[in-house]
Image (cartoon, rainbow, N blue to C red; front, top):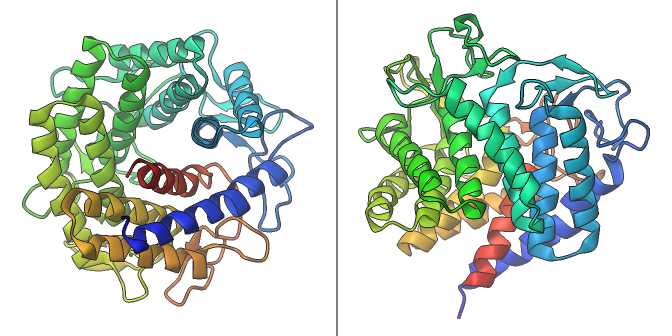
Amino acid sequence: MKDPKFTQLYEMAKKELLEDILPFWMEHDVDEENGGFYGVVDRQGNPVAGGPKCLVLNARLVWTFASAYRILKEEKYLALAKRAYDYFCEYFLDKQYGGAYFMLDAKGNSIDDTKFVYGQAFSIYALSEYCRATGDIEARDKAVAIMELLEKHAYDPQHPGYVEKLTREWVYDRALQVSNINPDAASTKTMNTHLHLIEAYTCLLRVLPTEAQKAKVREHLNIMLDKVYDGDIHHYKMFFRDDWTPTATDISYGHDIEGTWLMMETAEVLGEKDMLEKAEPRCLDMAAACLEQAILPDGSMIYEYDPATRHINTNRSWWVQAETVVGFLNAWQLSGQQRFLDASLECFKYIDTFLVDHEYGEWFTMLGNSGEVLPGQHAKIDGWKCPYHNARMCFEIIERYERA
């Protein structure tokens, strides 16, 4: 018999996914004029004229609708997945140098052709999931081609890991090594890029189960567990020099809790006993640290903390709350500790009460301490506000419940 709180999570997830998230994107983001999907949509669901189209959003659209079709088996999701995939391949893929452009204008012309490794990771993630959902081997081959370019140009064999960004022609320029969340040029490697590379390479492993891909994914998981994870404090370190020397003390609770389940997913897809035994205690320690340090009485998770300055960012980000639900659900399934399931459900209740826009649909981006929408955070869709974190939260709950 399933725990009734797990059943409640499942019922909430199905309702939120099928009655709010997916319908909003299907009704408000399809760009009939220029093709693909709008790049910016306001709170009410109206497209913002001239809104640019970001690689991150568009790759996540491919991933989301491909996942929706794979899990829910409805043709309407396949149609949207194909629309997203076709646009992505036609406009975002660089036909001359390979990889994907980072930003297009509303008409589909490149306005930022740099090869941001974070964006390439989501390209691999999207193409691999599209193959997984549809069986399209050409999509997998496109993912492999991008991965091979990353291995050739972005990978650092001396200190295994990946740089942040290259030129369109895949040339390394130290001046480009600033992440989207830290302007410190000394930080040539970041937790964020590596976290999303591991989910991408793991998804590719699902459709490319070769020994070479297993070896690469295994190496990457060890990087996350040995270099990025800090066993003294049970959090990720965020920014690093070439040799993995940390350059900052910031703690990002959202990335930590997201990483707890993504690293376990990687270990499970690898299916190797030693990696499972290595990953599980670290992931549970991280989940426990997040639960004890970052959860507020209303069930939500705060954004960041810097122990050096003792500055706490208590804003409630939409994606952090989504990952909190999945991360604590995963920790409960691993450990059987009821406190994790309780925390997962309480965070979902917070989402439903405050983050879901019950008037116009979808979720707000960032809230303050009293549940108020922060200035400038009303847009429902932009380059970073996507259906990936919140839809994936629902997908994970649904799949885990139906497997249980």
